[in-house]
Image (cartoon, rainbow, N blue to C red; front, side, top):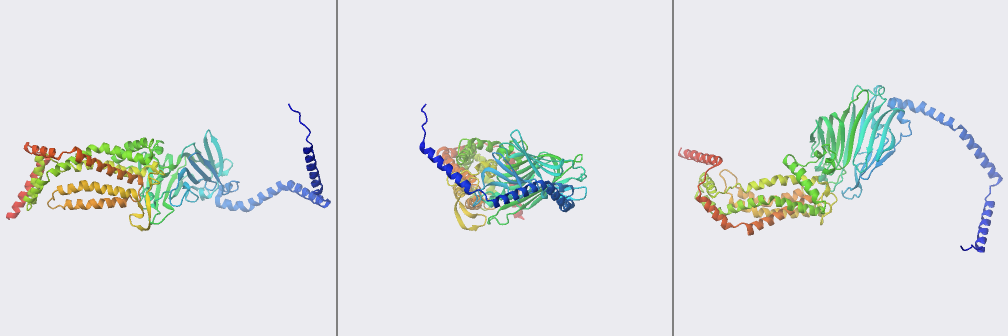
Length: 626
């Protein structure tokens, strides 16, 4: 090892620094006057410390003598809570990877509920989705005391205490009348969960509260707007509840509504794609539910959509309250809510009867599978292709029926001309022709009716599909909302103040589809006696239907418009292939002519129809003779 050498320059440097420090200390030493003043201050501080306990005692005594009588007159035994250090406007935060909750000392309820990972996509907002912000929600318990006071917990101060149970965060909020007498709200937040445990209980308040009648729990929420379209979000913002075990119902989303329900096990304040839910293990004996619509004019921007409220009695058992509950603040996503096995999937408007069944057991699982390895826009297209493949036999039968009717068109025209002055005979001969040719004029309608459950189910499916939120495709930046390509300087009733492209494409596709199908059907269908001219009506519908779709879907989620555009486009392609490459009109004509030669046995329905027509014709002839 190399021996360190003496560094003369470093020695000189340290010597200079030491000299400067000594000079500064000498010049900064206090004068005699300053030393005397400092000693005087030290003596005063020592005396103050000695007298401090007495001072505090006097202060408390002063508070007890002036403030406490006022508090006791107002709050009775709960005046004790107002003297604690927690009696101030503070909040306590508990948070996991998906949810952040801030609980206020005053009222003991959640002051902020923020959904992490999701932005509010309304105009001009880049904030995270907040279901609860300060002053838009509260949970209040109305307490009746034995000294005839009625108190609201929202006006009283709770004492917070945070602890851990394994990986769970536990926050207890206690409204105290003494060291061991309190009303307690207990929140338990688990990792990566939107659902938290919540309980209400009392301890040692038997001599404070009037337990002969229930306390009333009030839960209110004024729902913040979080989506781009006011009208679309408000249409699916509603109060849903479960009662009598497994029954579910909802209040109207379109207007103000209220209901009193018995044996309620959960209440959901649903905000289209997010929801707040209160569940209870002990069903509420009754619940007064109310929903007020706050959107007076959909063409105006708005902050709130609905005002929800629920009032439930909490009954005392053995002089105490003890309710075990749950709270949920998070996405209105089918897979998440259904996973809790608490019948929360009924919160979704998936359609009634067979429509809901198709969504639950077909579309949701299939789309979940597709979106697991495909972008969401492509998943919608692949879903469309699968639906069309499944329905292709029905489409084929429908087109074959139309082809048969087209072949019979000359003969039908001949009958119409021959019996133009005798509508009853014309109808009779037309039905006879159909029977001999083996053609069912309703065959073209039956396949369309078979497709209706699928089409109707999809109208419910896409608005309930949370996965489309914040997912872009082509020019659409969010498949759960409209795909605006142009902002209008004015508002068109029923249409809106923007132009969406996917609805335009879907409307064009349905126009060409109806032009291919409805036009032929209109020419083929003979006008019935006493009935409107269906041919003219169907021709009008070719133009009316696309316009209706354009207006209806302009403010809807672009995912639905994308589906209907692709669906009609694929259907047009399938029908062109069937028309030019599969169906042979000559073969159909030969088959019809062969069918005419075969003896036909009438069904009971056909026989009944023929007899009724013959009877009607006979009655008409008899009337003419008179």
